[in-house]
Image (cartoon, rainbow, N blue to C red):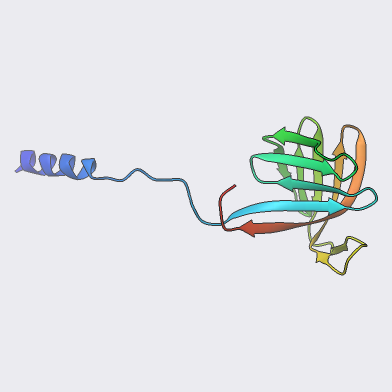
Length: 125
């Protein structure tokens, strides 16, 4: 009987499926500012900073180190630091759009201030 139970277990173990990566929505954080116009995207794997006055130039930091705090989050990379202050409603000053958070970005010893929101996308990044 014991041998039969072990054989059945071995057969069932062979039928197990391998877990796959989640395919549901992913969250991306987007921040932007004006004067000068800039944008930043944080997708869990990297931070990407762009400026309107430098078309085609993207500054990318892979694997930013997060520090989660009571009032917000800080992400530190080699060239980019992002400070998110949650719950401080913010307007970009150019439109009527209101964002959930205020942000401060430091890129290569230059400082930028703006607004940001977490955005869900339907496809993984």
